[in-house]
Structure formats: C-alpha cells, structure tokens
Amino acid sequence: MRGWVLFVLICILSSVSAEQGGINQQTDFSGTSILALDYPNEVNVTKIDGGEMEIQVQIDPAKNISNVSWVTQICINSGVCYPPVYNLLMEYNESWGGSIEVQNQASYVNWRFDLTHENDTQVVRIPEMGFGWKVWSTCWFDGENWGGDDFKAMGDGCLSPNQDNSSTDVSSSNSALSFPSPVLVLAALSVAALSYRRN
Image (cartoon, rainbow, N blue to C red):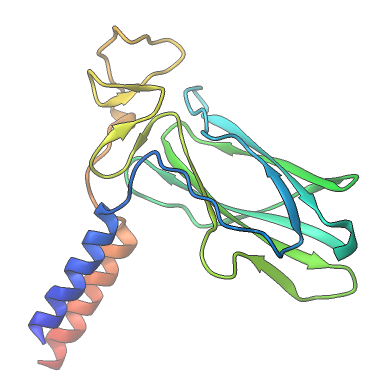
C-alpha cells in the first residue's frame, strides 16, 4: 500500500513539473457553434494593476445562441490557480466580445466557453472537459523556469513600467517559489492519510 501511495505522489508532482512555460494551447472547435476566435497570443501584465485581455468570438447565427459565457481561470507565478470566473460576453451582430483584468503576477489564463441556445436551458460546454485554451503572460514562471517578453533575467522577476533591462531590483511580490499547486499537495496528503489509516 505504501508503494501505491508513493506512486500516486510521484504522478501528481510530475504532472506539475511537466508544465511547459510559454507554450499556448488551443482546442479544435470545428463542428461547434464557434466559427472563429480572436485573442492575443500573450497577456501583458507589466502595468501596476496588471493588464487586460480581450476576446472576440464569432458564433454561427444558425445555431440560435442566446448567451456566451467565457469561463476564465487565472494562474499566478506562485503556482496558485484561482477559481474559474464566468464572464458573460456581449453580442455585436454575429460576434460576441468581452475582456477581463489580469493581475500583474499572472503566469497564464485558461478558458473555455459555455453556450446557451435560445429556448433551451441546456448549456453546451466547449470543450466538454477541462479548459481548451491557455495563453501565457509576458512574464511567467512555470515552477522551474522564468520567461516572457517582460522577464528580467538578472533578478528572476518581471519588468514594470518604471524598470528597464539594466535594473536588478526585484519586488518581493513578483518572486515565485517552485512549489506545486496547493490543491495537488492537499490531494496527495489526503491519499497518504487515508492509506495510513487503513494500515
């Protein structure tokens, strides 16, 4: 039983360290109500209050969509991911758009879409499981490495509007520790505790 617990812990921790920083992800939306997407390939987070990310979604008018929710999750450089947030997009002709604020310590933004058809209470989730899209910030930390256009290599930190590449001062709020997600750590500890009680 102890060997099984060790195996589970290794799998959980290896899944955290396997994250490849700076590589965006996108799911195939062919065959869905989504015809096209327009969003940035990175999120600028160098402003004091962070940055902003906008998205435009073109929906097939024949599908009679009444609501489009952009379900976003922001993960920060310390390894913490915040709970998903439902952002109701506004319709402009056949296009739906909106924006979110992204704090200045963000590593990346995950998202999916929840679509509601007219006269139908059922919500269609794209993709059906997990998040289908991920866009990294201009200064990210993936648990092992720093990267992004605004990463300052001399101090393991992020450039701000008042800094340049020659500066070596790093705000303590922008430093990151190489720890796995707290949720994964709690899950691993729970498995270990249950196995210990059974023995």
